[in-house]
Length: 425
Ligand code: DOR
Ligand code: ZN
Image 1 (tube, rainbow, N blue to C red):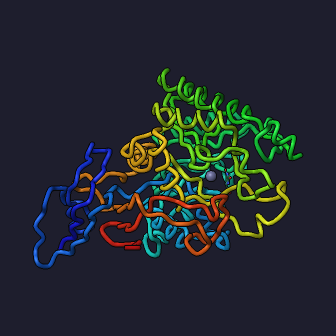
Image 2: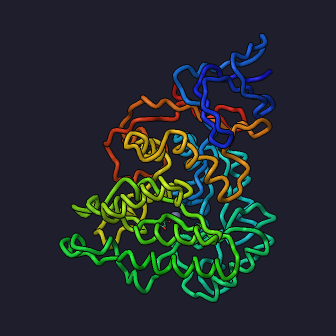
Image 3: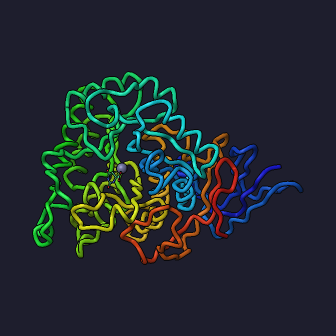
């Protein structure tokens, strides 16, 4: 028995396909993409008339909080949210408890996702043991266990020599270093973007220099070592310029932007809105414009959510004390689709930034519908409007500044290896 998804608009940027076609799935893999396929009597047919058929989306930056912080999220609830957002693969950050710096936890994550999850989980291991910045993890072992990159995300690797050595080892194992680039000494405890608004609100500021200075260092260390460097959640205009210039000089650097950093400015923090407290901070309109320009000219490789679930007890307090982060898996697609309406990216480019391009950054064998690939697929209704409410969100946490906002665009069916893992049609 095969599954045939019929009459949808197939968009697969990796193969330059954008046409009304049928997708044939056999034994969990893509068998073919063709026009007007005739189903056999025992084939399952899914009617995708009026829908996009895209590769299952790939998010290379999520926090699943499992093990250790399951009251915020776990692998089941987090991958359930992913599937509802159209994502079939997520790369999860190691700031769990204990942190993912060893094979046992890496394997636990992969196996739990395989057995109970709704999406594939590709673990990112820490760079330093316990993310303490003192000693490097066993990179070779972790690669064998299934890890796809190394990051101390949430924290900068402050010690330049440590990062240099991490890059040298990572380069030897052909693995990327994924940098949370914020110089802690320049950040100096800042809780929002530094500028007139932080002064007005009486909050300590984190200037764009904390990010840009650290990114400049990281790029130069990548240049020195030849390592592959991926920079997380860029937020400032100056950072985009640094990455653009480094790429022109042939440095092996890639970067990502979150939907919140290309959608919101620091104004979202007004009223001491704790759900807009995020690291790096939301910045100015000029920075948002630079993110869009970076997406437009390809300097920014991928859209990634930095899905950072937090329990209300970690957020419901004075702004300075509240945790950094917001959820993003279920709002990423509609927020990214706004870029099409604004003329920043074409629809195909948005899908590329959410599928094959992030997959390529981490060399995850996903993000395309090419024959033989695992049948991870999203069916998207571009016209479906919905409201962000506690009831409409699957994540265990609900820390989002988009609460009660209207979203346009929804994954109405998600398939993982040919099996339906999310359905609302
Ligand atoms: O806002 C953030 N939250 N930024 C990070 O880098 C870490 C994340 C978290 O783990 O909550
Ligand atoms: Zn993160």
